[in-house]
Length: 508
Image: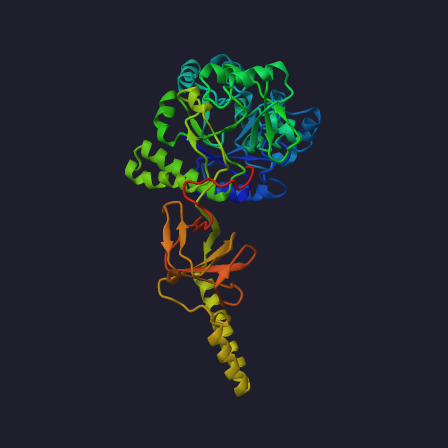
């Protein structure tokens, strides 16, 4: 099975490939359902071309999965020359109105039907096949039995399913709540994740006779039986009120065959990949173009190892530590969705996704031997200059300086010294961390390795002077006693994380 990972920008695309994706899917500005993702624009196609050269054989899928209005089609036509600059292998679409346009202008690119089209039966698959589609991204409502039936009926059609990540409570992501509450249409790429907000469940005091009836059957504080609870749910007296909109109320009517407006659990199928394969799935897809590079890297790596174990390339024991790392990525409670039973999909949860770690920095290339020599020559010159300046001071000033450094050792100017077996790497800090901390290094092939303070240092790349801390926006190099792979990054423990407690860190 193909492993398809999300990429909201060039950096995430690089990590998706580095951490084991066979293919990645991107969006282009204005035409993707994840407009809040960075997406791709301007001359980034050059970087994408370079990445595909670095990772030969990896595929690139482009999501053009919004519902197109006439003005959107005009915009698409106006941007065709720009799209052609990207090395796109397949387009993911839901709106059949753009199919002829893509077939005419991108004859070598495949057409993949988006999950937004909610395709869950053989007849629909056959129709889309006749239109030129080579792959169907099935609606999330398709069960394993249905997938197997579709594959048996249309064996030459590639089938793709989501295997991990957020699930919408509405039908295959066709959410109307976002547009209703905020004016931001999910179908135009502006989903506000309204289903994950905090709501109060209230009873309408002005609902008249039906409300009185509901109050009577509630038992005035006594536990409700199933019949009474059903009567209240179907009475039309229940309301939702979102915390930040205290004066707005939204009626609820619970039926026998649909789910209340609540937050769904996250999909997780990593323990069931063999079942997906046996059902005829050709590609498994990770949700998350708006997620962090940390999420993209660790989830992609976990599924890569699980697939390799399934194919006999590594043992299950070798894959297990990487799979266990999914618990260290932000997530909600998990479910197997509709694959086995819709009962699993109907179970909801609450709270934002959370993790005990935060991404501290990304590690770039190791400095070459020549760059190493240049760096340490600069550091030595800086140290000699500082010493010369100190020697020029009046004796009293020297004494004052030494007293000050004794009281405030952090003010000392220390320059990085060469250490046998250590290596220098470029580093981009994303969050603040300091040299008193034990940091964890994560790489495509190393689950994680802890570096104690004595095993790493950071320094100014321009002067060679050591730093005691770094944060986003500070240029820095990492000096490490451990050899690091390309694509490694640093994570640190989140001091505010409480085990077993999911914090509401935002509406995403």
